[in-house]
Image (cartoon, rainbow, N blue to C red; front, top):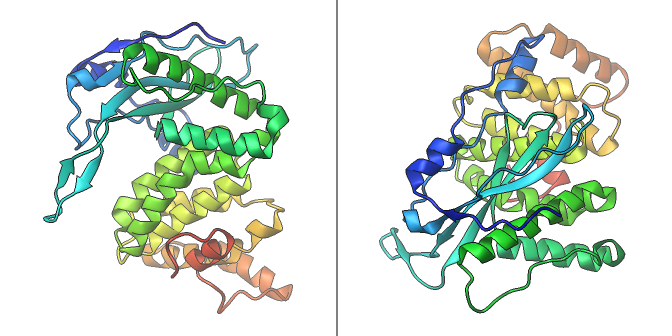
Length: 336
């Protein structure tokens, strides 16, 4: 339990200045590792098209203290700021009009701290209702594990005070820290949905609309979040990575980072034994083979891998596309 956090109101300019950071330099061993380092960019808070004003922003008064790591890496969550926003109801002409009750958006930063703070935290935005849904789901599925969790109750008055936002932020941080410390909670579908559900819904809608260039940044940030929390070759991380590769390669002009994401996916797939995930490997190889051909790259290694599989009696031609294989494992909006 960390001490109560009240926080204060800040201006948008001062918030951006406080959270900005230079890119982290590294000396990686390979181009793929260089990309893996560079993809861990810091998400800079942006003003919202819903008209956030200076009075609508709450900022944590100080960073969470670093844990005692003994030289290791500790995963932790921090809510550095929150914003009070009105909901937007689309009007007939397509523009947004504010209407209804206000609500609070919490910026949830995911960090891997050592003796120094994580230089590349990444973040997602969540409302109280997201945390409540997660809490209710875990309480029903794992009642004994969640019975000691102190979850903030709904209140009728003072929802937008700095005191309440600070108290809730502290409780949410502790709640998420606890979840990742308990394997059965960390690996639950409820937690995974909390981490990626809204983003995948939006990204898949954009993919259905063939607006891949807008879907890719959403998937990139979601991948960074999952990659902070789960193992590199865990099912959810590899599935999201393959979805990202598909999004980068299914548009008429491949995304500028398509090759880097594809190379990372291929490297992550080395020595994967999960049979569910192996159904994605041949479509991934075929996707990379086509991408290498488009870019004029040497395809011999990929062709050799496919030939080896064919000699083992595995069907390597005429199968599903990468997107179709992903959809079979995790049905979302996209279907082609």
